Length: 374
Image (cartoon, rainbow, N blue to C red):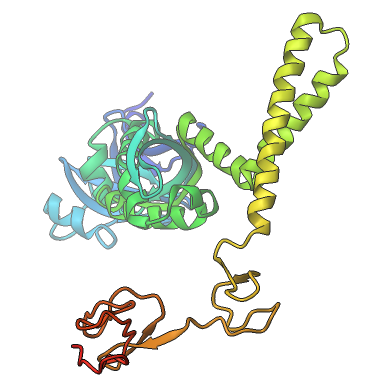
C-alpha cells in the first residue's frame, strides 16, 4: 500500500447510518476509529433521522434528512468552533451522532405495586393499572445534553424505566384530578388517556422527547371492592329482599318434601321447614291485614264505619266528618270535648252555679237563680 492509499484510508468521505437492529436504538455514534473527516465529505441522513456534530463536547451543527456536502457553508457552528475563518481544506475531527426521530410504539407501563387513592364512593382504595404509550425525539440537542451523554449507542430500554416511573407516580393524581368515580372509569378510558397524555407531556419535553400517545388499557380494583360491587348488583337485581327470602323458603320446603329417604334428619328438616312456612304464612297474613286496614282510619260518630282521615263526609251515612264545635265563654269556637280553650285557657266542660249548684254549660248567668258566673 502506498502512502497515498494509506492517507486515503484514514479519511472519511461518506457518513451514514443504517439501523440494522430491532429498531429500538435512539442514538447511534458514528464509528470514526480515529479517522478524520475530509473536506467536502458526503453526509447521508435518512428519513426519521437527525445527524448531530459534536466538537470537543460542544453541540455544533444539526442536519435533517437529505444528502449534505460538508463545507463551511453548511457548518456555520462547527466553522466557528474550529476557527476556520477562510474555509478549510484539511481533514478535521468531530463526533457524529445519528438520532432516530421516528416513533417508538407500544412501550409498556404498569403498576408493580398497588397505588392508593381516594374515591367518593368507596373511600380510600388501592388500584392497579396498566397500558402502553409511544414517544419520539423532539429536540435532538436537548436529548443529547439531558439524557444521552457520550455513549456509543442508546437504546429505548435505557430510558423507558424512568418514563414508566414518572407515569405510575402521577397515576393517583391523574385519577383524582379527573373527578371520575371508580365505578365509571371503565367507560372513560379514552378520556382518561388523553388527560394523562397532556399531564405527562411537559415531563417528556424536559428530556427533548414528545409523548405522542398514552393509553390506559385497564384499571383493576381490589378483590374486596369487586365483591362488594357484585353483591350490590345482585341486591339491585333481586329487588324486594323480603319476597326473595319467602321464595327461598318455599323452595327449601319443596326440596325437603321431595327428599323421601331423609330419615330422622329429613324429619327434622321437614319440621324446621314447616315452622319456617308457618312463620312465613303468618307474616304474609299480617301484611295483608295491615294492608286491608287503613293506617290512618277514624270511625264515624253516627254509623261507626271506618273512614280515612281527610275525608269530609262518611261514605256510609253521609254525615259530615268535621268535628263538632262549641263556643267558649270568650266567644272562640273550639272542638267539642276540649278540656281547655286554646284562646283564653278557660277550663271547658259542665260548670255549676256557685249559688244554687245548677249546671251552667257555657252560660254566663245561672238559668235557675240568675247568679252571674265568671
